[in-house]
Length: 115
Length: 114
Image (cartoon, chains in turn cyan, green):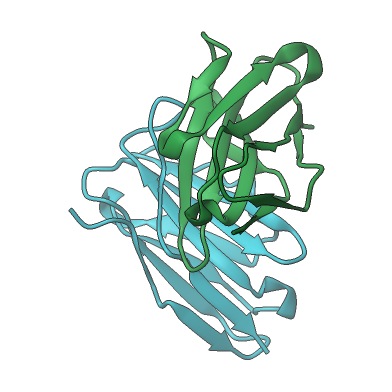
């Protein structure tokens, strides 16, 4: 049983470029979460997907951030016109279903550096 | 707004000694509470969680936490620390139905000395 995987492991980009970060959840997990971990802000919730429901985007820091989840499995987090303050580790997690009852399993993260 | 405070940025304990990591939260209702551990180079791992029931919660790796509503606290404890426990520990509150939206504390870095 593979865990949550994320790609790329590391990404270096120039300010103003767009980046896409990928998350492959554990097979059969219907809930998927994105978080960001940065030196300045610590760990922050970004967005949450549950099955085919509309995602909860309340944690996205600006409209430059978006995410989608295709076929209820793989998710892509896109950051447009990257800024230096976007530099962080982006973590993805999945769980069987939503909420307290289910344990979240985290991926290793994508380390993003914006120059 | 909900918030989580971990007053200790870092703590050093001797191997074999007991450990208590402090966590205070601000939340209007009965909170979903979590402790996570992040070891160097590792992803986040859930240690334990609480929503209702017995206020003393047992987790993995020999950890436990106690929910004290009167003190708005959810402190993490371990009776005897092992060198492998050196890591960063995050307390968190869950918002939303089922507590899916997690608000994390700033973390406490644990150092273990021989």
